[in-house]
Length: 94
Image 1 (cartoon, one colour):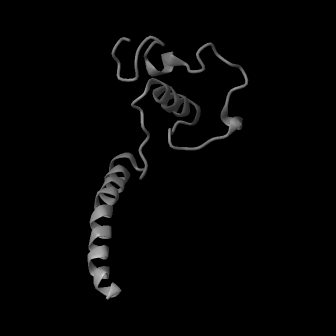
Image 2 (image 1 turned 90 degrees about the vertical axis):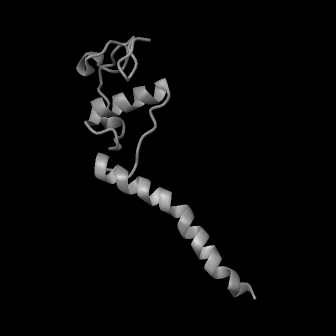
C-alpha cells in the first residue's frame, strides 16, 4: 500500500536536509549568523563593503535612513578599508 513508501520517503528527506543543517550550524558558529553572503562577483563585493561601512554589520538590513546625505564619488570610503578603488575585495590589484 501507499504507507509502505513513507519510511523510505522520510529517510530521503532527512538525508537531503543534513548538509543544509550542517552548513547553517557552521555559519552560526563561525560568523554568528546562519546566513552567508555571496561575494563571488565584483558588484556583490561592493554591496558587502557598502553594508559593512554603513551599518558595521553586512547582515544587518537598513533602509534609506542609513545612507548619508552627501554622496561620494564611488559611494564607499575605500580608505576606511585600506584599499583603493582599483583593488579587489581580496587585496589583489585588478
